[in-house]
Amino acid sequence: MIRLTVNGKVHDIDAAPDTALLYVLRNDLELNGPKYGCGLGECGTCTVLIDGVAARSCVIPIDGCVGRDIVTLEGLGSRERPDPVQAAFIQEQAAQCGYCLNGMIMSTKALLLRSPRPAEAEVLEALRYNLCRCGAHIEIMRAAMRAAGHLAEAQD
Image (cartoon, rainbow, N blue to C red):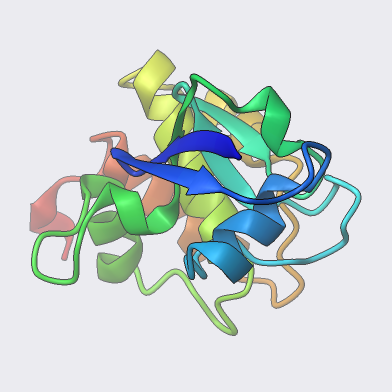
């Protein structure tokens, strides 16, 4: 058994120590925010926060997560009370197909945890390795800048 703390809850997982965190999150814990994209840690759809840092869950074995705080998209907020980053993405309608959103939101959240009011260049750098095949980059950037407090509500 491997004990993981995910979204503030402790879970005892019966899986091989080298099992990718993504598989445990999706298959065992039924948390479908993180998506399977490339399986190589390159596209960002599987991004979660581990101790507040953006991490690619498709390439991280669960034994490396013991004693660490894992947060998925589901752990940020709820439909009734979304996290400010989630709310910004909703306000900016920053999605087309939505497949990349988990990674974009989680990477933005990680950035704001370490730099609460990042400049646009910092946002671009933080989202640089998250792939969006639909071309919703303008809306995604607006959402990230809104979450960072750079876009006022008056612009709605």
